[in-house]
Every structure is written in C-alpha cells, then in structure tokens.
Image (cartoon, rainbow, N blue to C red; front, side, top):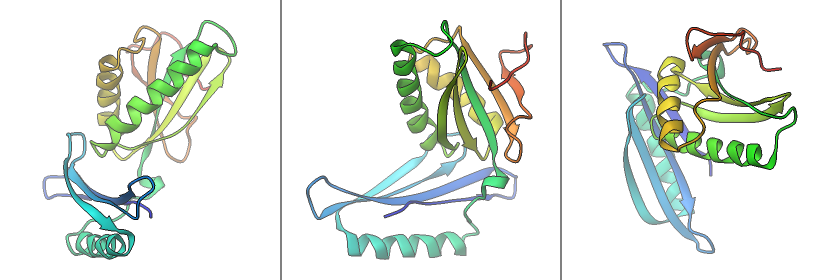
Length: 190
C-alpha cells in the first residue's frame, strides 16, 4: 500500500503537511496505520492504529485522502520542490568501503530525520570522482539545509568534508552552495 503525503500553506504562509501509510507486521495479516502531521521543518505528531488489516487500512487511507482535500491539503508536485545536494569530499577518486558506509549511514539518518519533519525525501546517491552526492527533493530547501546540518552532526558523521547546495527542480545543475559559506570553490556534481 502506498503513502499519501499532502501539503498546504496556512494564512501566514507556513507550510503544513499530513501523511498516512499502512505497514503490515512481518509474517502477519495485520499491521499499523500511521498518520503523521505538522509544520514543515518541525518534528511532527504521529498517531497510529494497531492491529489493522489491509482492507480496513485501504478504507482509512481513502478517508484520510478525502479529509485532506476537504481541509485544503494536496499532493505537492516535483516541480514545486527543490533539490538539496549533500556532498562529501572523498580522499580517493572512486571511494572506499568506508565511504560506502558513510553513504548508507548518511542516507539512513537523513531519510528519517527529514521525513518526520515533512522536509523531503532522499531520492538517490552516487559517487563522482572524489565526491559522494546525496540528492534530496524538498518542499522547503532552506529549512532542509538547516535540518541536514543538525542531522549529520547528531549522527556524528564527518562534518569537515561536508558541503550542501540547493537547486531548482527543473535544473539540478544550477547549484547554489548553502553550506559552508562563503563558498571556496564552485559546487559541482562531477
């Protein structure tokens, strides 16, 4: 079953989010239905219904979607978001086992941290010569940059080799470095 993720701006221009999904317990016919909501950039509030079967979850998900529409929430398009690129400088051109561990650890930490704040999704990662790039799609790129720095510090990942840039959705190559500032060299994905 899929996730429903919706957003809307309140009268003050603050972006709010609501999302819901169903997760079945391993090897069982029941699971939990989760509703997560809050202000984008802040830790969300979560409610769960446990021991829900798939048929009930489908009904709950449909009702959740209808309630979101009634309250002015809608799915956000990719074009209404921006890219945030987390980049680590590497010691070797192709990366080492330690760098692959950094990649998986950073992606895992960022996925959870950003999701619980409505700040976006980790879309992909790759190794370029002497660089590890992690691509994040975010509805609020500036807030995501601050959250990324907090997350990676908290996860005790190497902060000295870190750079972060933002770009519009339509052209990921129009990168603007957001951390550290001032930029010492141009930020590139290659």
